[in-house]
Length: 121
Image (cartoon, rainbow, N blue to C red; front, side):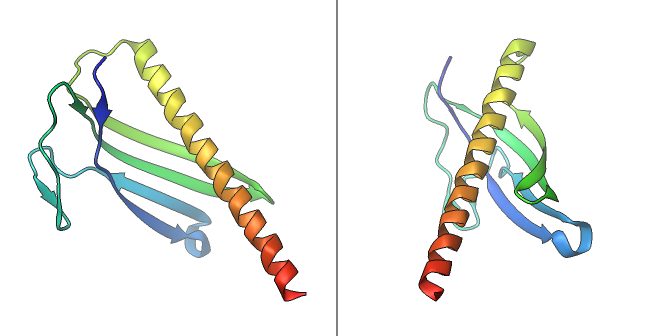
């Protein structure tokens, strides 16, 4: 399978006060564009597939140090009729990557909070 690339613009929405949720909305620039927000987007290299996506991750706090993550993805790939097992494996990989990233961010924040408390005392 050929390597894959994607360009994705993310918008972070803090709707905790209004809706009790934190959202990350992502969208790819149009397939035909060569620039987005002042940045050049090079042509797709030979033997590389470019994936176009829209995404929305919603984090809903449940209780202390626990959140519900709801992820929506819509992908447009140059590969037609992907077998279901490939889609499942891709979804699993994306989900595991998201969870790992959130856990790393949480550990970083916890470490930062501990350091702030130690400095303040």
